[in-house]
Length: 176
Image: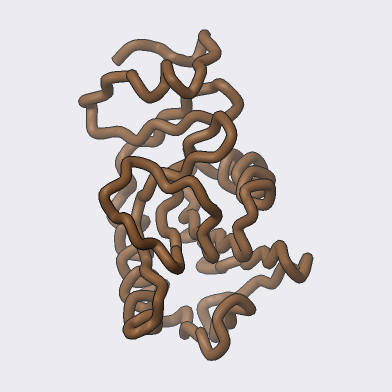
């Protein structure tokens, strides 16, 4: 794979990149960032969160997605999980509106980007809640951008979302 770290890319150039190495590529402020495939613990947490959200959203006009591409301005972000309401056209390459909830699961390679850069970008995009799941501490931090609050939930707690009434998740079911 070519080293993209030395060049600033436009959205059009990024869209034309050919990547066949199985990694995820994001574009943030003209910089191409590569994320290796997640480890097993990361995938387990992502699967458990997806399962809980999917069950909660059943029958509602919202859906949960993994690794959907979000495009805004000249950025392309790929959160681990997104909750999107009112999506009618599922035959699109990139979603260009703000999801209600975005979730990132920290890894050593993504810690800084997820906790600082993406926190700022998701707020600018208009995401209502941003969840950061830390596999090492077994804590999920929820940033609610509408209410300007942030709360931490540990494995012994029940996570409570302010975006969806009655969305409560036992974190002991997430961090097994």
